Image (tube, rainbow, N blue to C red; front, side):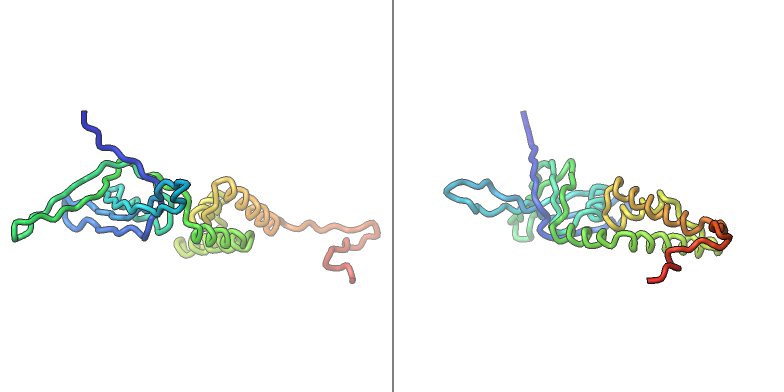
Length: 206
């Protein structure tokens, strides 16, 4: 029985390096290094880490290049690969890496998470800006008066640009949509008991 299977979970030491496919039939190649902590013991509470070289190909490579970045937590289920290249003098260079069958994305790096947290703190200001930008882009594409983006479009944009969860993005988009409905609703003229227009908050003297 032959078994060649490994699983590693760690963080990327640097951004993955993508080599695009440049010829027909070729595949894109992605190489990255995974830092994996060694087990701690009472005698050695800081044992250091191992650096795992990983190489993947094709769709897995292009997807990894898009979603992975330095400091991100990644888990790989892989097999060990050994390659030999013969030199002109007859000697061999040995190359070792791990080829993943499955890559799972975990937590972002602390720095990246802090950046996304700061962006989300902007709240409704960001939502308004995103809604206005989507409306402007739609108007430029159609050369027509700016239509309002739908609530789902705003929610999807928040997920993509602000890193929000689907639930938080939909909730924020509902707030934005409610504001738009309020601002667009026609104001009905009304009068008070004395026949004069009612006093609004802006009319109350301080």
